[in-house]
Structure formats: structure tokens, C-alpha cells
Image (cartoon, rainbow, N blue to C red):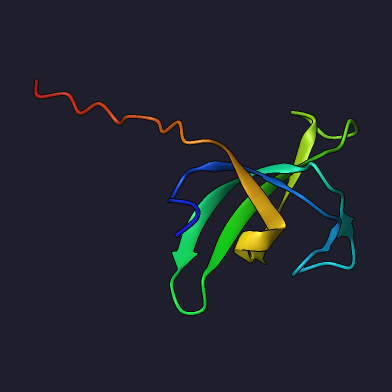
Length: 84
């Protein structure tokens, strides 16, 4: 598989939104939130810049094929559990 859960990705072409009529522009960055094996696909939360919103982004979830993105970073947050 090309990507793993929580990998940071960047889309390579403009793509239509899965749940809206918007076109999501090339170079938009997102995070893999689900991986599918057959056929290979990835549910991705994309951060779409919007200066009118607090935080500066709105989000869209899309399903991408491996040809539609590159993996930018494989950094993952580590969850620390307190034993106290």
C-alpha cells in the first residue's frame, strides 16, 4: 500500500469533492484517515484554506486512489498514557 493511517499527503491534480460541489485544488494537503485494500484507496481529510473561518481552514473528506496523491510525511503523533 502506498500510504498508511495518519500519513500527511498532497494531492497531485484538482479533484471534485465527494460530499460537495466544490473542486479541491492541486497541492491541497490532508491526512489519511482510512485505508482500503481492494481496490486500493484512501479516505483523506483535506485542509482547505478559508481565511473567513476561525483557524483559517475548512475540511473535506474524500476517497483517493494512489495515483491522485503523494505522501509528504509519515510523522505520527505518539499518544502518551499516564500510569499514575
